[in-house]
Image (cartoon, rainbow, N blue to C red):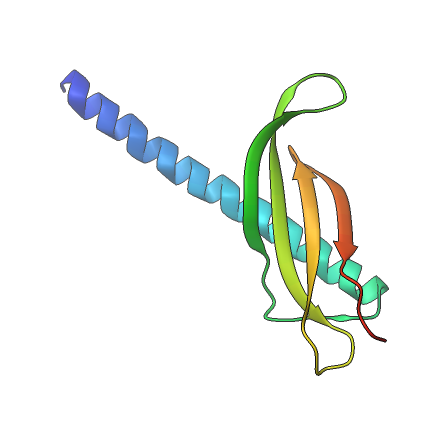
Length: 103
C-alpha cells in the first residue's frame, strides 16, 4: 500500500465519519424542533431542519467548538409559513426561537 492510497483511504473514512456525525446532529436538532413546536402550539412543516450556518466559536470555557445554525419552517394558522431557528455550540443547543407569527 502506498502513501497515496493511505491518504485516499483516510479521506474516505473521514468523509464517512463526518456524514454519519452530521446526520446524527441533524436528527437531534429535528427532535428538539418538534418538541419546541409542540410546546409553542405551532406545527412543524416538512418535518425537516436545514443547516444554514457553520463556524468555529469558543464556548464559556474557552474551548473551540463548532457553531451551527439550523432553520425550520412552521405554521400557526395553517396558511402562512414562518421560520424558526436553532443555534448549537458543540453538541449543546444554545437557543431556539420562532419569528413573529399570528396565532
